[in-house]
Length: 259
Ligand code: LCV
Image (tube, rainbow, N blue to C red):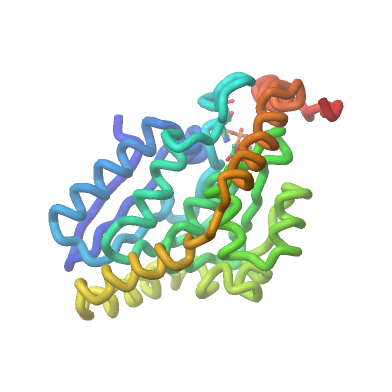
């Protein structure tokens, strides 16, 4: 049974993440379906994509599928990790991807939403960035996405507390473009998409790629890269990382010891 629902109309493609039993946890299976559809949309010349969950959902996405995080000793968010593949697929898709957000957005789900080009959320939506809750070492690309989207003190608050922030704060920070009530958000998002579709797809796709390249342009020395990877290794080799995954599986609060 498919984990997503897709639709195309007037050069606008819609992807509904529909694995509601697992709160749209970003499993390899769900991500594979999304990336296959994005490729098909590219082939069809789709000029705007809307990424959403079912209308009225309480959870847009519960983030990385925790059951697919590797045991300690392996980088849990490496280049080939499905979540990283999805984020790159959205960022590199040659047309704008609009996130229509209802419900809670958790962990890697925030990064997926923030990888989108335009974000519109209902007042009830929330955003929580959760590696600290699981004992996971965030990766370079993920931290860069956050640093590009969120002022450092707020990014630190979200990373260190792992607590959700409301859409009102996300709007104040410029993390999302609009807040729209649940009974108006569909028409508003598809109205934005219609404006985009009426403009030059070539100009838009080139500007999107230029902005992606410019926003990720950082001079990282080999020493800096190796230092970052070394720091991350301390975490994903730790007992705490193992405790984070075990506590999730056992549906209990983690007891982190700092080693
Ligand atoms: C697998 C899940 C998940 C899930 N994975 O429903 O950003 S990082 O670094 O942290 C990155 C590694 C990452 O993204 O990690 C994941 C971060 N996500 C979270 O911490 C959110 C974890 N989920 C929850 O807190 C709750 O599920 C929410 C609040 C999203 C929804 O709560 P609700 O009571 O509505 P349940 O918790 O009962 O979940 C329903 C089913 O979905 C599974 C969960 O295990 C349960 O499965 P079973 O019915 O088999 O017990 N599920 C939820 N989230 N991230 N599986």
